[in-house]
Length: 306
Image (tube, rainbow, N blue to C red; front, side, top):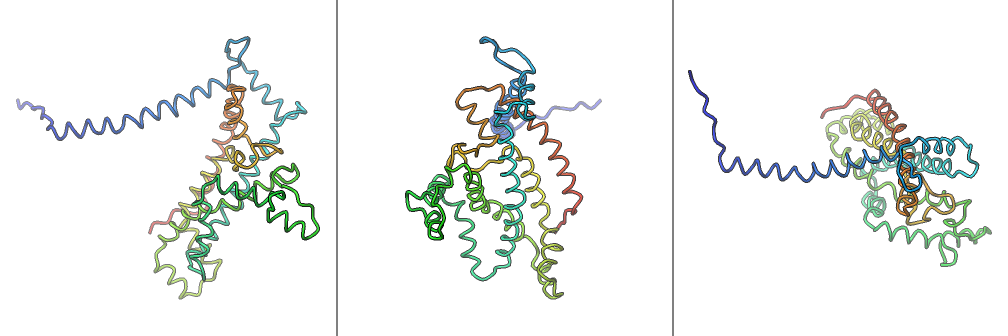
């Protein structure tokens, strides 16, 4: 009988194997510690409470969470946190995302002064967030001669600092997000539109395709994989949608969100168990929502290969 002789690995092959093992060790450890372990502990913390210094498993956090969101606790701030979170989410999905797409289209078409517009849109992504937030505070501060209060005063209005007034603080933060929120999406959309074959656009021009037809029948279908991915990821971040609250208001004047409240509560070591309950409840809601949206966007347009 013919015996199979096991072939010895060469030093080069052994070196490749060792390199791959070492190369993959760090990301595997990172996944096990910072994703698997952290999420498993967060799941357990959602069912833990501290009683006289001892940690025990209980559903008390869930009962308290239900009382908070159902209105049984008249002093609860949880409904406000969810409302603010949904405001940021709605701004991202229904304003920033479609406007980013349309602005990207105009830049793609190389309208007059498009290089100047591109600089304006991308500038917030170049300047430090801290610098930009400080500039925005200055613009809205009447005691520092901010331009917005000055203009309001010229028209007979009351010069106020919109970031420290409960009537306007939340809207002021939303305006900041709208001002600075285009750059990242526009970079992605410009890259996707740049891949559309020139021959397709040339044929559309010859056929006399109009503005809306070109967007609806050519640009959107051919960039749909990119656009649908951003839609799904935006929905996935529904409960972590948050503006630069730390830089602008620190959560004062009813501007806090779920994500910022969890950060602040954990940072100040007020509790680690109840925030885990809130985060887990948000996950239970967001996961099926993301799967549903992913299914729906897959039904609108099929992927186009080119």
